[in-house]
Image (tube, one colour):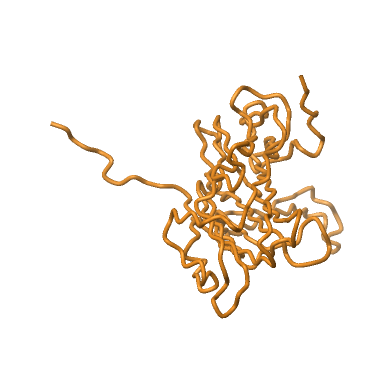
Length: 302
């Protein structure tokens, strides 16, 4: 039986949270001992290894899932015969116990090819810094100074009398849940940008965790029709109560997702125009949900 490698020092770090208690950082796919079913590891199906829909999932105190909703291989435009691939992805972060939450999450996707040119990450959405569910609160800061009658140079005698002068300053501070998306160059210091990344952070005032769902879109430019792959990681910092044992399993990292540009589009969300991917409003394909409230949930049956 092959044993899993030990957990490295960089894989699990205990840091200070905003509540003055330890917060745990984890990397999906690392391999300490865990309970059955807690692993993030997903393999490619030997009978159907290409373009798997389920990228990763872990179901325990905190659910973390990543799936591919649609894959479209085509061209930028008929008059611009540039090979393109459109990916629509969904990431879910769902606590399953009261008091459990994810303080932040880092998602990183890197695209490469073993037989051709690496794809270029041309466009992503969401991109930049976005704020959700802002909140405000008043903070009062008091500055106090102790004064003594004998401290003045003009007084010849120290009378032993002192008093405290104080001033209260009130200010309004604000915070919000935040999502930051960027296009990056990872694993090398040359060439076109080959990666997409997102960071999700909770509102530190309300302490309600990161957004529960993010749908993201990526448009890749390709120089050829050769197969390519995506290596991905999701790093999450959780509340201090969510233990290491419940978050990680004893399996190696997830398999990279394998793509074949000659395969037909999945067309799950809509029927795509494969010859005009450059004209897509990519922002319309992304979405961020902090929480979902079901209206009219009270019903009478009779």
